[in-house]
Amino acid sequence: MTPPWKATDAGVLRLPSGRLVRGRGLRRPLPEGPTPTFAVYLLGGEPPEVPWEARWLRWPDFWLPSSRAEAAAVFRAAWERADADRVEIACAGGRGRTGTALACLAVLDGVPADRAVEFVRENYHPRAVETPWQRRYVGHFTA
Image (cartoon, rainbow, N blue to C red; front, side, top):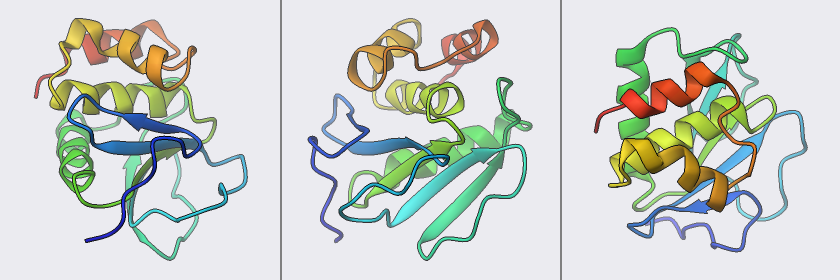
């Protein structure tokens, strides 16, 4: 078992179950401290190579994932892995796509879909989930 993130690590969101997931923007340097053991990169183009296990979910900036089915499967995998691994969710800026994905993980963790955006804004970043269609996507996301 991999030692988890600490709730005090930069960008780490604590889900109601206690699972910890780090959100970040890839435009910023990798934070000091432990590296992820599993990451999901939400980008319109292929992400840079990393020395840890990673999944790429094609997701253009300010829009929605290219495949809802693939997104749901990737979110479930990230949520399951967060029980024992250091999971990172990241897009270029770390707010819109990352916040949307974190809100979907919150739904998987038991947060009602109509409260998930508010939960992520209160516990991760106040401007997470940037567009009306991202908010609507979370509101319709099912576990």
